[in-house]
Image (tube, rainbow, N blue to C red; front, side, top):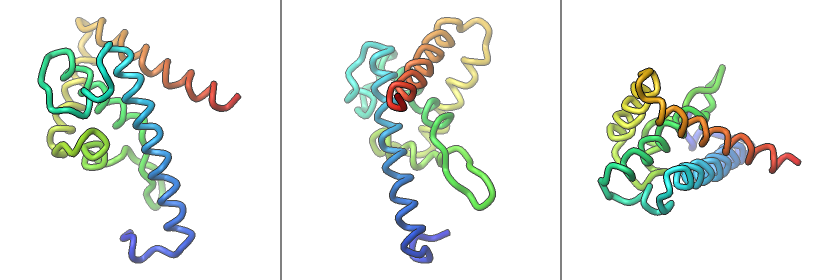
Amino acid sequence: MQPDSLNEGQRAALRRLQRAQLTEARRIRQAVADGYGVPVGQLRATGRTREVSEARQVAMHAMRVRLRWPLATRTAPVPFGRIAALLGERDHSTIMHGVAVIAARLGDDADGCLRYTARAIHATLHATYEDDAA
Protein backbone atom coordinates (compact mmCIF):
# COMPACT_ATOMS: atom_id res chain seq x y z
CA MET A 1 0.00 0.00 0.00
CA GLN A 2 1.41 3.37 -1.02
CA PRO A 3 1.45 6.25 1.52
CA ASP A 4 -0.55 8.41 -0.93
CA SER A 5 -3.44 5.94 -0.91
CA LEU A 6 -3.73 5.89 2.91
CA ASN A 7 -6.43 7.70 4.82
CA GLU A 8 -5.50 9.97 7.76
CA GLY A 9 -5.97 7.20 10.35
CA GLN A 10 -3.74 4.83 8.41
CA ARG A 11 -1.08 7.52 7.99
CA ALA A 12 -1.17 8.17 11.74
CA ALA A 13 -0.80 4.45 12.43
CA LEU A 14 2.15 4.27 10.03
CA ARG A 15 3.82 7.23 11.80
CA ARG A 16 3.34 5.48 15.18
CA LEU A 17 4.86 2.31 13.78
CA GLN A 18 7.86 4.21 12.41
CA ARG A 19 8.42 5.96 15.76
CA ALA A 20 8.21 2.61 17.57
CA GLN A 21 10.72 1.11 15.13
CA LEU A 22 13.11 4.01 15.70
CA THR A 23 12.83 3.56 19.46
CA GLU A 24 13.41 -0.19 19.22
CA ALA A 25 16.32 0.33 16.79
CA ARG A 26 17.95 2.71 19.31
CA ARG A 27 17.50 0.11 22.06
CA ILE A 28 19.03 -2.58 19.88
CA ARG A 29 22.00 -0.37 18.95
CA GLN A 30 22.58 0.52 22.61
CA ALA A 31 22.32 -3.09 23.81
CA VAL A 32 24.71 -4.31 21.10
CA ALA A 33 27.17 -1.47 21.77
CA ASP A 34 27.09 -2.24 25.51
CA GLY A 35 27.48 -5.97 24.85
CA TYR A 36 30.52 -5.44 22.64
CA GLY A 37 31.99 -2.47 24.51
CA VAL A 38 31.99 -0.21 21.46
CA PRO A 39 30.54 3.30 21.14
CA VAL A 40 27.01 3.37 19.70
CA GLY A 41 28.15 5.71 16.93
CA GLN A 42 30.54 3.06 15.63
CA LEU A 43 27.59 0.86 14.66
CA ARG A 44 26.47 3.53 12.19
CA ALA A 45 30.00 4.48 11.10
CA THR A 46 31.92 2.92 8.22
CA GLY A 47 34.76 1.38 10.26
CA ARG A 48 35.69 -2.20 9.43
CA THR A 49 37.55 -3.46 12.46
CA ARG A 50 36.60 -7.02 13.34
CA GLU A 51 35.04 -6.07 16.67
CA VAL A 52 32.90 -3.26 15.24
CA SER A 53 31.94 -5.25 12.14
CA GLU A 54 30.72 -8.19 14.22
CA ALA A 55 28.80 -5.88 16.55
CA ARG A 56 27.20 -4.15 13.55
CA GLN A 57 26.22 -7.50 12.01
CA VAL A 58 24.69 -8.62 15.32
CA ALA A 59 22.68 -5.38 15.36
CA MET A 60 21.53 -6.09 11.79
CA HIS A 61 20.43 -9.59 12.79
CA ALA A 62 18.69 -8.38 15.95
CA MET A 63 16.79 -5.75 13.99
CA ARG A 64 15.73 -8.31 11.39
CA VAL A 65 14.49 -10.64 14.15
CA ARG A 66 12.88 -8.07 16.46
CA LEU A 67 11.43 -5.35 14.21
CA ARG A 68 8.10 -6.13 12.53
CA TRP A 69 6.43 -4.72 9.43
CA PRO A 70 2.63 -4.91 9.00
CA LEU A 71 1.20 -6.65 5.98
CA ALA A 72 -2.44 -7.08 5.04
CA THR A 73 -2.86 -10.41 6.82
CA ARG A 74 0.16 -10.72 9.14
CA THR A 75 3.40 -9.11 10.24
CA ALA A 76 6.75 -9.81 8.63
CA PRO A 77 10.36 -8.93 9.40
CA VAL A 78 11.19 -5.34 8.56
CA PRO A 79 12.62 -4.95 5.03
CA PHE A 80 16.40 -4.98 4.61
CA GLY A 81 16.27 -1.46 3.17
CA ARG A 82 14.64 -0.14 6.35
CA ILE A 83 17.36 -1.74 8.49
CA ALA A 84 19.95 -0.21 6.16
CA ALA A 85 18.49 3.25 6.84
CA LEU A 86 18.43 2.62 10.59
CA LEU A 87 22.11 1.65 10.54
CA GLY A 88 23.56 4.55 8.66
CA GLU A 89 22.39 4.47 5.05
CA ARG A 90 23.98 1.19 4.10
CA ASP A 91 22.95 -0.79 1.05
CA HIS A 92 20.24 -3.42 1.59
CA SER A 93 22.59 -6.12 0.25
CA THR A 94 25.05 -5.30 3.05
CA ILE A 95 22.27 -5.93 5.55
CA MET A 96 21.30 -9.20 3.82
CA HIS A 97 24.92 -10.37 4.03
CA GLY A 98 25.29 -9.35 7.69
CA VAL A 99 22.07 -11.08 8.73
CA ALA A 100 23.07 -14.25 6.84
CA VAL A 101 26.54 -14.32 8.38
CA ILE A 102 25.22 -14.04 11.95
CA ALA A 103 22.38 -16.52 11.32
CA ALA A 104 24.89 -19.06 9.97
CA ARG A 105 27.26 -18.51 12.88
CA LEU A 106 24.44 -18.82 15.41
CA GLY A 107 23.50 -22.13 13.80
CA ASP A 108 27.08 -23.38 14.09
CA ASP A 109 27.60 -25.31 17.33
CA ALA A 110 31.25 -24.21 17.44
CA ASP A 111 30.45 -20.50 17.91
CA GLY A 112 29.26 -20.54 21.52
CA CYS A 113 30.73 -17.11 22.28
CA LEU A 114 28.57 -15.38 19.66
CA ARG A 115 25.50 -17.32 20.81
CA TYR A 116 26.15 -16.28 24.43
CA THR A 117 26.59 -12.61 23.42
CA ALA A 118 23.45 -12.64 21.26
CA ARG A 119 21.40 -14.20 24.08
CA ALA A 120 22.71 -11.62 26.55
CA ILE A 121 21.74 -8.80 24.18
CA HIS A 122 18.24 -10.22 23.65
CA ALA A 123 17.86 -10.68 27.43
CA THR A 124 18.86 -7.04 27.94
CA LEU A 125 16.26 -5.93 25.39
CA HIS A 126 13.60 -8.10 27.00
CA ALA A 127 14.43 -6.73 30.46
CA THR A 128 14.22 -3.18 29.09
CA TYR A 129 10.64 -3.89 27.95
CA GLU A 130 9.70 -5.24 31.37
CA ASP A 131 11.17 -2.14 33.06
CA ASP A 132 9.19 0.12 30.72
CA ALA A 133 5.96 -1.77 31.40
CA ALA A 134 6.30 -1.49 35.18
